[in-house]
Length: 389
Image (tube, rainbow, N blue to C red; front, side, top):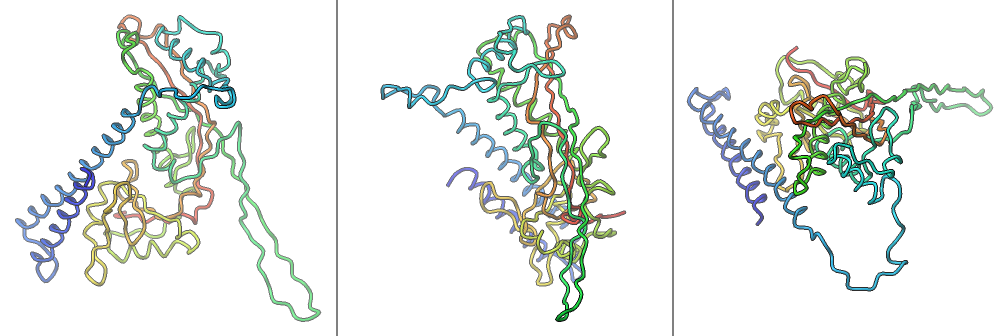
């Protein structure tokens, strides 16, 4: 048994013990004494600590797998033109990637002619295709909305047609007059809002060829952009940034507002979503809301929360996947098919060097930029429950 599975088993055992403790120490009204409540809080915290440890081990295993890949693969057959495949060109070529890394390390004092193939419109150089793919991988891994939504790579303004009124079928008598319905359409426009992140790197680190500068920049840029994207995809007001899932008029539909969360509210939330959307639906909640949801029971006394017993699989609530985000408001639970949230991505990122800003501190500044937009095409595809308002 792997270390991750062993930790998951311990977490599940700890959670079973916590549930059994609540069942055995609750009075007839379901309340715990102050001392028992403190004991339960410690048991619940242990379950959370296991969750943090599991995520850390999963990241470590992923890094181990990546670093264990062989650097060089021996050639056992004579290479031929047919087996070598087509030579990569442009931003995908090895020459462009090497020239970009050399430019970064030399503070762009050494700029190869090959980099002229990727000059961004607003200055700077477009990152190599390989970097861009890895950067997209970081964004997808860190940003839950990029994994749940529909990403559309665009080269300009993108318009989406939406049917707002569909014709209905009507019964007609033999020889009776036909009734024509009208199909109405709306249109949503996805633009491209600019997002940037800047980092500073010491000159010593920049010129140290032993350090994996490429990997460091991809990771730091990717995580920073990913966090800003996820916040905007959930809470953005549409002014210079994407329109978020929780926008009061352009986001999901508010199903209800309750003073305190009860088990019936979660059931009502699920069935407020129309049946066609439920087959691909899932929850998005804030991490702090999990503590409340874990204590909810159905009419049979069974906990509604179902922890995952398999690595990589999300926990479930009422049979549906649960995704957590630090940017989801604590007083909001959403349930829906998030594939109807479209992300318009211009598809390329650029890196610009800040030549003089930090020269006196022995630091070099770099700015990564991207252009992206997002909006929910069908508000009815996402139902929202508000708590405590």
